[in-house]
Amino acid sequence: MGTSWAEVIVDYGLTKINDIRLTEEMEANPALFFRKMSLYMKNAIPRFSRPAEEQEWLRCVEPVYDSFEYQAKGMDGETVETGKLEFEVFGAAVIGRDKFENPVAVPLEGCRYDALTGRVTLPSGIDSYTRISMDFYTDGTFHRELSMEEKNILGMCIQLVWEGRFAGDWLSRVPKVKDKSSDMGSEANRTRADTERLRFLTSELNDTMIRYAQNLAYRNVVPRNQHFRRR
Image 1 (tube, rainbow, N blue to C red):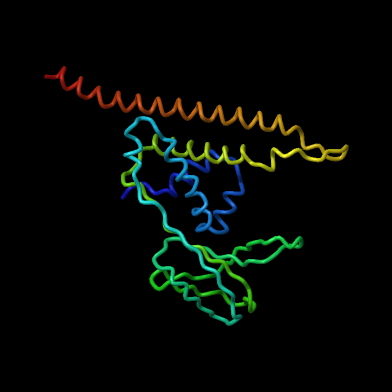
Image 2: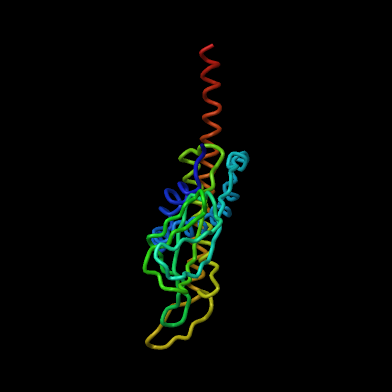
């Protein structure tokens, strides 16, 4: 059994990303959270490029995910035949709108998912015509058990992909209207700071990969030399 993607994401990725919203998302709907973060992992893996053999060592089974929408009938003990079988993680939310008519998803607790049949049992008290979004997720797994060094570097790669996404955010670069009561600061200064941070994280990642490759080479060479001296 190899290392799971979830272990790397939670224990090594989230510890480096300072965003409390991710923890809240994981608690509210773990299936949707891991589906989202698996995309960052997919983009992070190719960044782990040293030593050259590492990409072969990071071969894996990618995660599987799906979703299902349902409109409740308002019956107690209502069951839903989703047809989604053998998923490991399940989450559900009620789809509605806030006071500004923007769509929102409110976590729905009390649902029971049977992985063998794909049947979901809804909690009581749900009104008719309530829109419910259901998410299903089965984790990805690396073929081999990764070392702590490898997990740490993958966590750094996830962080770099995450930071790059926000540094390239269009809205943060658009000039804002400013007056005496509102000053969001200079967009140019924000872009410069983001660029410097990405440069720092990239340099830190490269240095860590170089040390990792050197340590591997050292461990592979020293035992042979010691064996030769004993003979």
